[in-house]
Image (cartoon, rainbow, N blue to C red):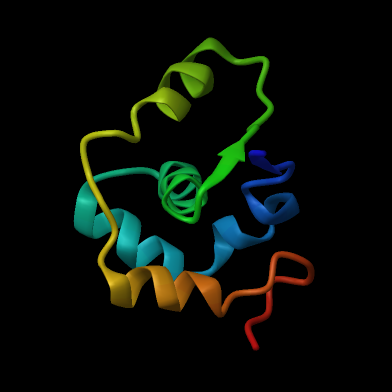
Amino acid sequence: IVSEAYSPLGTGRLVDLPQVTTIAEKYHKSVPQVLIRWSLEKGFLPLPKSTHENYIKANLDVFDFALTNDEVSELDSLAGVGGTHT
């Protein structure tokens, strides 16, 4: 059984959080790519939605880096709704 990450970008609110931006800058990736990578590392099947060809291609470019345990833990602590962290 594979769990689906229906909204891997946190309904769009996680993309504005500075914690995620810092991680993205470290890997020279976009914030959505970091969030998709986090989903994969957690064992979820991320299903990001886009109709833009460039975004669709970027969503696939997440297999050339891995998050550290500390980064995964930091992302784990963020809440997708409301853009606040716990």
